[in-house]
Amino acid sequence: MSSIQSDNSSTHRSGPVVIPRALHAVSRRAISPAALKVLYRLKDAGYQAFLVGGAVRDLLLGRTPKDFDVVTNAHPEQVRDLFRSCRLIGRRFHLAHVRVGPEIIEVATFRAAHTVVDEDNSVDEDSRRVTDNHGRILRDNLYGTIDEDIWRRDFTANALYYNIADYSIWDYANGVTDAEERVLKLIGDPETRYREDPVRMLRAVRFAAKLDFKIDTATAVPINKLAHMIDSVPAARLFDEVNKLFLSGSGLQSFMLLREYGLLAHLFNDLENILSSDETSQRLVEQGLSNTDERVRADKSVTPAFLFAVLLWPAVRKQSMLHARSQENGQLDFGAIQDAFDNVCSRVVRRVAVPKRFSLTSREVLALQSRFDYRSGRRSLRVLDHPRFRAAYDFLLLRAAVGEVDQEVADWWTEIQTMSPEARIEKVETPGGLNLPAARKKRRRSPRRLSSSP
Ligand code: ATP
Ligand code: MG
Image (cartoon, rainbow, N blue to C red; front, side):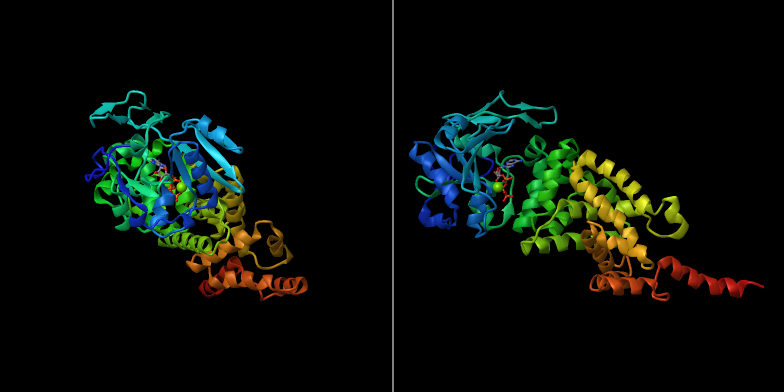
């Protein structure tokens, strides 16, 4: 370890500021027993062991960490030798997953970054890391020291190391102050860091939304210019990121920031194009994300299937209404929605690889929206037995909330669910009880036709 230095600015390669236990708020009591066990066992075997990343940041902020990541100078094989239940994973990086009871603790080995600091603090370019001609890191599997490991972290607040040996925090990049001041700052030159890994732009938005941090100006400025680099990120990784952005309790705020920074267009191009000219769609997506945030906060389950139904609906609806059958009567049509969905979804999955098991559910939920227009005859009741009825009904409520369908339609479907099977049949078979949009239109049109006839 290097000596303690006062200059810990994020652009200097220097040793850490070591903050002793008495001067920081991270308490062992807030760390999961499983993570502590892993940390202590590594330490007792003579290795360095630190808690790192989001857990240290969250503990400093008084938040409950989502997970506890550990870094060590032990190599993965050495980690495996210390624990009975340990799996080595990862192709690009070797990581150890240590199972302690129901918990899995991720243990990574310090890695070297693309530049290496020598004893005398001169910087050597490291030719062992492979980047493509846009500066993106393709292979990076070099073990190093903690002084090097810091340079592969993204934001200063994510680059704090909690040392199990004496419970101090090692801060190389002024991360404690930045966390306290709630600013998100990339370590090093922002443009270079985004080029290395464009997903960091999405991570900036995600952390700003989730932690209510401001993105530092220098970190924010390059995003608009580099947003197009998201296009080169593998679609499977973007699917993971999109889930984290929208299903972690700050989806609405993430959505606003994605739009502000010009990133949404590189994830959901059709949606971005529609939003600017269609206020109802914008409200629908915002309301859908806000409902999801509430569910997450209430610890209720959320599914990517509903999320993608929300995100795809504006484009699917628009396209389906151009279909001949919908043009005829101005109504949603089951088959037209399915066709439009397939078309829209095939473009989306090229960017964001939504697995079929989710997209097929989204497709059903959306196609069922056409069924809610039918509220007469026994056949109209069949939708109640559909396995996706509940989700489709929730989606109908969302459409009603933003004025895309009449509230009375949603109320009708709310009421029918409370009725006995007999009462339902009576309701749909009573003439005059119908309020089919098509029937209503006909009724309205006929007097005009009568009055205009000679
Ligand atoms: P969360 O609370 O969402 O888990 P986190 O900060 O722990 O937040 P992770 O994605 O779990 O985020 O990553 C753990 C740590 O690994 C980060 O804090 C950061 O230091 C580092 N890291 C992860 N992904 C990247 C990346 N793309 N570029 C640079 N550093 C990264
Ligand atoms: Mg984490």
